Image (tube, rainbow, N blue to C red; front, side, top):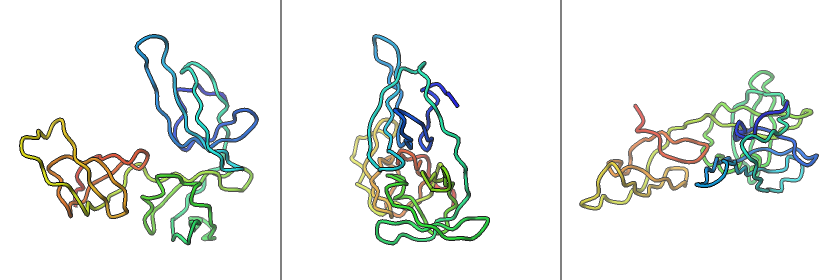
Amino acid sequence: MKINANLIRPGNIIEHNNRQWAVLKTAIVQPGKGGAFITVEMRDVRTGTKTNERWRTADTVEKLQVDEKDATFLFKDGAHLTFMDAESYEQFTVPEELVGEPGAFLQDGMPVTVDLIEGSPVSVTLPDKVTCTVVEADPVVKGQTAASSYKPGLLDNGVRVMIPPFIESGTRIVVNTADATYAERAKD
């Protein structure tokens, strides 16, 4: 199915140069002069090699039809992640790099969506947002305003995110899994 390049989203599987690619990150760039374009970081489904591509937003790309399967994350074993099919309860493993950077947000029992092409997993999509605990937060610098400045914070999963100055160590926050950014304070 042909789609405009500006509709490419992380988790999509596209065909480019007769190869199948899993989209990892996208960014739309609007230069001051000229037309907008989209940069796409993607990984080859078969070999695992990564590449970056640029398309004008009006260009079309081939989005592949994939089978989606609901699954539950069970555990990590070395460089492999084990999931359980939500319907058949069968367990299967995938390499950790199939999930990419959002894999740091996987939690035991987390529901995920696994995309399959011809029966083999090609990408794993996590929920858009996940709740984490801040374990380390820099102190607020006197004179900083809450509106414009963020400070670094370390989450319980080892990921560093920029957080507002009022967030302290021990606070539970909601984080966007796609780009590891602060969304809001968790409502516990």
